[in-house]
Image 1 (tube, rainbow, N blue to C red):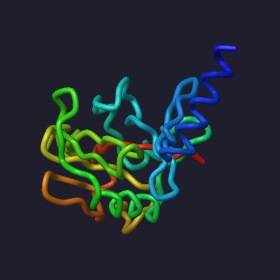
Image 2 (cartoon, rainbow, N blue to C red):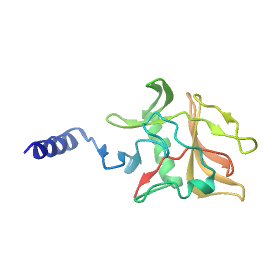
Image 3 (cartoon, rainbow, N blue to C red):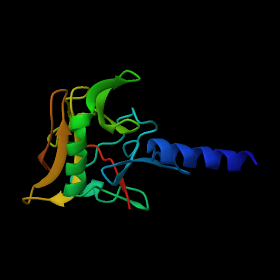
Length: 168
């Protein structure tokens, strides 16, 4: 009886307010522009945790079953949603909200790990996230953001960037 009331309430909220955040056994997601984004980075325990830093090659296989590394158009849809988002602090962590409430996802400004000496740069001031698209031999497509902008570009594949998976 109790579970049925919860299901009815969730259905009501989904229909009434467009809420599409779904919690599963080991994952949750938010739908933005038709793409279902994980609510936390790979390797993170909470949405505010930075999670792991992966080379592009490592990033190709870190998403769990039923999820994948975003492609170029999926990342671009998140960039497009950033116009409605904002730079913010969540539980003491700088980052950016993407989407329009209640369909928003927080990406922490986890920075980037150097490919030369594993030094971390821009932690707390910028976020860098891989896509699955290779570019030139040493580069791959990514999204990056700071307080005043969000863009797509490329990064050296041996650098350590964050990964935010997309539900299949």
